[in-house]
Image (cartoon, rainbow, N blue to C red):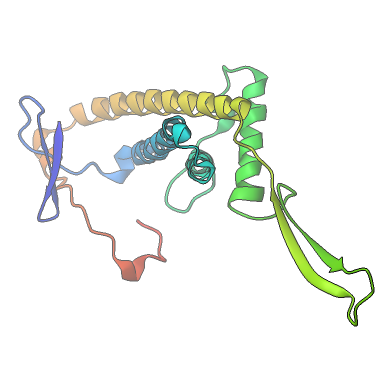
Length: 217
């Protein structure tokens, strides 16, 4: 399947017997778009985790740390309150997993909220100090120092835990998306063909830098 945008209209190729694509009304679509957007973020998270192993040979700790943070941010984003889409419920996503799964989830949520996205906990600290001389000079202070300490969170255990959580979340989202698609299909099949064609074209509007501060509709 191939998707193209021509003059704002979304066109799809590669589906046998397809004739046209029409808009799916929001009142029928429900959470369909939310699941699709969650999957986008989760796949970015998974790609970031996979890339950590690929760049390990380079010995670039900064690159690995950046990928690690990307994986955590995009994962937790799916479980956070947002204006433009609903959030996943960890109690539902991990209900069939051992209790350690939710414990690991809470760890990454706190890590994202209190350390990575915001600076609140002790995982990042700065210690201030005064370097004094022996007192045999006309001044006492040689230098003021500020030393930052960042806790290392990218370890084998935490990496494996996040990978498991992300993969399980992807499975849940795909399963939920498929179930919803089947339900929507059943609803649409009960309508007349003429009613479906009247839903209009699927239109893509380019994001406007002047509206970057506004939530999408």
